[in-house]
Length: 202
Image (cartoon, rainbow, N blue to C red; front, top):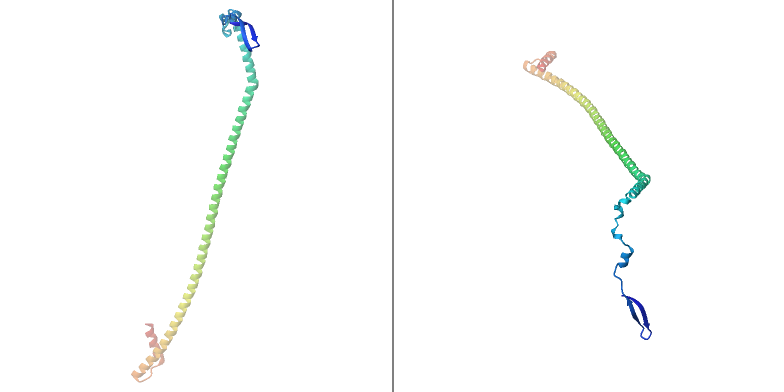
């Protein structure tokens, strides 16, 4: 029901409904304003709109292709190209560092080999110098020993000769005294010396 007349009592401050109009059935106005609407087909599936839909599809696809080819694809190509250049640069840097590392390793090995060669050469020189000095010392010592031995042998020979001379004189005197005592006559000195020399020679 819809109220058609409203009165306000000032004494009590209450709104009084005098009459109400009958309410229309729910949805009647909507149904009256759109007669036959529920019977129409969905527009995308309406055969009468296929041509316009295809035209709009072609236009939309062409616009999208234009936008993508003019803006998105060049930017994407630039990004891919930049990434490829960075990757190539990184690879080139890695190859350069690898070559430098290899060269440094070879230089280190060469320096190590040179140092070993120099150390061996220094050791060989020191060994040769020590051997040469030892040989010179040995020769000097041999010469000194030979000189001392020769001097000792000469001294021994001189001492021996002196001793033999003394022994010959003593033997000569003793033999002369013995012969004189036995025979009562002094023998000839030449005979005594000859007999002593013959005895010492044996």
